[in-house]
Image 1 (cartoon, helix red, strand yellow):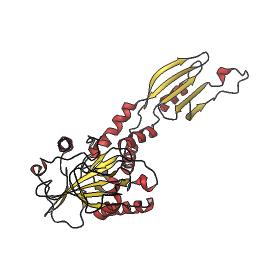
Image 2 (cartoon, rainbow, N blue to C red):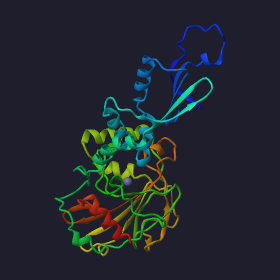
Image 3 (cartoon, rainbow, N blue to C red):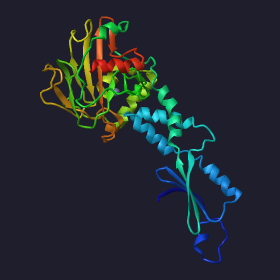
Image 4 (cartoon, rainbow, N blue to C red):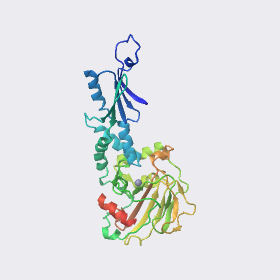
Length: 345
Ligand SMILES: [Zn+2]
């Protein structure tokens, strides 16, 4: 077993007889993946050793907590924010390891403790929950009048193709419209569909291409960080940073005024790794037509040369004379999931 921590090892006085059992009188190890804690001793434990064991089972499994959070988010900056919050709020005196089994051998006794994963899930759940609550910092358009949200009637009959063949609408509020995006001090306007790198992406409805970044080049990690710092100073995501940097290699499709009566509808397909050659501004596409492949362009990992965090960010923008809105804006998250499932049915 690989051991990352050895807390106490052989504090016995020099043994005259080189008998095997005296070489490991008392040892505590935690496996590298943090899932097991093993206590090995011979004969019996003294009071100090018992106290040491009781303290060691309270070791915080930081790596596991971080992995669990990272696995839930495609967005590494958001995951890092939540991890910091969880880390700063770990209650004092929690035993993360629970007794599992005892193994006796000729000279030693081993007590195995396993990591209590349910406890960790309970610990991180409130922070996940909190971060799925919408607040009010949206992406502001460069030019806008007073927006008043489209009412439900305006979008109730909407039917769209899913933007990838074998995906479904995620149920996690954090992946849906209205979720906070603290890394850019803004609000998520779209849906993050979990798809592998290189998954074919298609038009959700017919329309005309108005943007297709065939010659997109990834920006540097430092420049991206610098822009994100500016969003912090502003307390919001300005539209230029969002449109020109954070969406990465993107396709925008103008669906005109027919898709959602009374509004001009534009769909956005972000973070692509490839755009099909025929997809150019002015090209008319039909519903379900392939436009490119998913990727992670415009994300933090991409600026560091990694393919981590690949997903398809899709959103539908609605505009009227009053301003600009996104599909799902202002919806409560439980209603939103049902609504989106009907739209993509
Ligand atoms: Zn997204």
